[in-house]
Image (tube, rainbow, N blue to C red; front, side):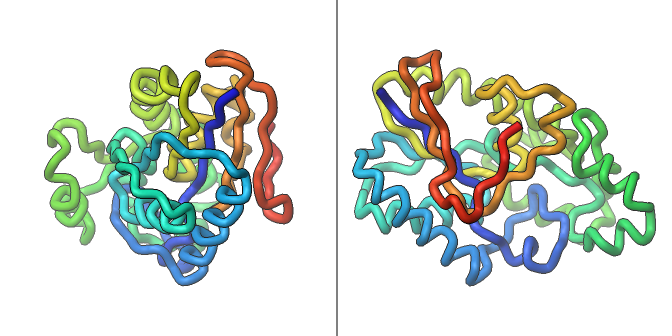
Length: 235
């Protein structure tokens, strides 16, 4: 029996400020670092050897995984994949969520944030974060860097990578993936066969590892959040 651990990065400084982050690279907040360290302790208490570590290109996810590995006293390689990045929030990047609700209405912002196939307005060249985003991902082919994404778009890049590079390893390896709210929602949808409607209602807590125990490579035996005080219902 092998295990897959999925964790959304700890709280970032833009989570704290209630801003749309997406592909912009921000650091963990102090609370986020504490969440990552707590996650490391919870995983260490499982007394299992982690064989593979995966994360996105974004430093809030990488730093979360780095702090977990530090608690595990491990030195294995961290595999970074841009396909596990957060969804791109387009021209909303950097803006305050509450202010956008006041401007556009809560229904419209909910559509941009939570719908399956509605993407926010594409990021424009005069957006103050436009060039910073492209400069942060010079190792990614420019035509692969989106200007906005829906959850469906995120699913269509994250899940194929998972199926090709990670899923075949589960039968013989314990794996941790440190990623983001929407790239993980995409993986949850695939792994748990959640409908398009229900996946939009799922909120994933920051810094709380989800342990998935497999009977074999195709069958799940059990799953649970490691911090019961902060768990969210998986629909």
